[in-house]
Amino acid sequence: MSETVRYFLKRDYIVEQLRAAIASGELQPGQKLRQEELAARFQISSTPVREALRLLEAEGLVTSVPHQGVFVTRLTAQEAVEYYRLRALLEAYAAKEAVVRLKGDDSRRTRLLEQLEEIQQGLNHAIDNKNIEEAANLNRTLHLLLYEEAAMPLLKQLITDLWKRMPFHNIWLGAWRTAEIEAEHRELLEAIRSGDPVAAERITRLHIELSLEVFLASTGENLTIAASEKPIE
View 1 (cartoon, rainbow, N blue to C red):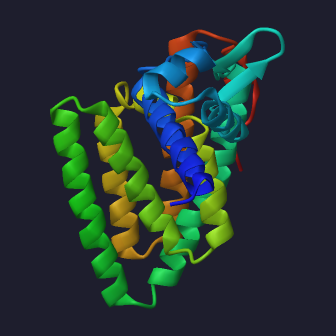
View 2 (cartoon, helix red, strand yellow; view 1 turned 30 degrees about the vertical axis):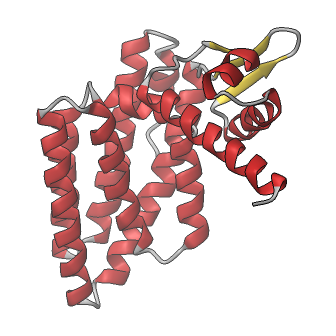
């Protein structure tokens, strides 16, 4: 194995480990990430650590502040509003298009529903066991599996990129909305089963907008942002 390959393997390993640490809450929003400490933790040189941090910054997970260092990104209320409204627009459209495409293929729709039901059962189990990280991962898997049926790779990639930008928040919020999430998923599955794209769009949009409301209420920051804006049409 060449040195170049080893270097990229090390860098990518660090990226995955730090991304998981941010997602699990081990690394908190606003926490400083020191290159020398990370190099010691992973027992490697500082160069792949530095490159890993640059990749995470490109994803929006960390922020580099001149003369201060690198920190786990802390979103403002305004940024959260923008993030969730973009998600609501894109994901509602993806859900609608997925159901439209499935209407003409009963066998494919049946297979998808079986997969989604299985994921939902795993999600319920994770919630019952208070495994919020696992629940968040299954929640994401459920949604992305549906959106894949829209057959729009670019749309799915945009949605995936948005999810990546706030993994820590997805997990933290899951602890607040577990019961509601299950009920909303059941409504979404019923919309898929009945072949109702309008309902799938509405349920998905509401699902995300309610998460935004919970986030703003829990932080107590700039609550007028949500109240002053009209619902997404």
